[in-house]
Image 1 (cartoon, helix red, strand yellow):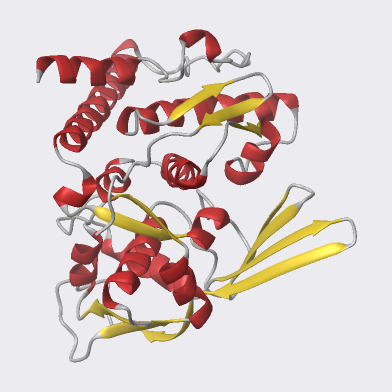
Image 2 (image 1 turned 90 degrees about the vertical axis):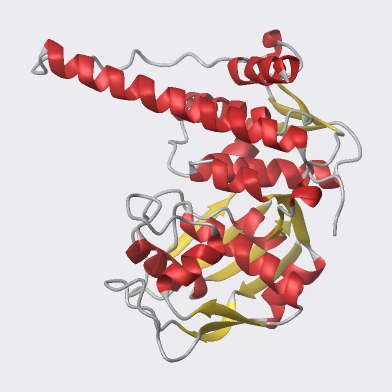
Length: 338
């Protein structure tokens, strides 16, 4: 156990690439200085909180990494699935105004549309909901899914805390579920005169009877959602398996997206492939300016998140290079499917 824990701690400290020399650290502008109006005591308190938060995060990653080494996802009953379309879509990380969200790299574009009165889904919660929808569809073989008679019941299905605080914010859960269930995704590829597209609506109909002010209160009827035929087929035919423990442990939407994307790429990868930085920014870096400084900021954040992902998926073989991220054929993070 001590040797195993030591190796994991090493992966948490190091970026986890083939060698430390492979890492290209961007030159970043000098960070802003702390507010000079803060007292020495205030600065110390802020610093102490940051250290504690960082220590707790490392401890959580270490505990999850050890659990995964001790028992794989299949044996632990922790195999999850994510519809491939939702990995491509990569929803906003933060709130986006309007009802239209699009990214285009010149060869392909991804557009998300929603009712303007409802707004676009964002953050960690819709990613957890998407994973639950995909897994539930595969396990039940049904397009109509039962969500629960109370908001807390649905939160339990997602593996969320209902005791309050950030993760127990059930009011946000209903808001994000409403946004996600109303979303329409359009995938388009264009090269020369060729044009291909695929449109996916998540659901045909549904009803959410929960009261966010009384999350424990059970309604007389079950809240349900009926997946669209297109999304149901994505779940059944093109779902990507992953370890649910990782999804629940990772905190930031970008880190979750990176883990799911890396798991999918390694699941299908047959030869070494270089993913250019500009393509990675298209996939993950919405909100970063299309400037050298914006790219530098994106790469710094990308590497930070990749450290966390690689600590939990150390078998993924990759290297960070000047032109992009090179992936090498690696074992899938899920060894066996049920």
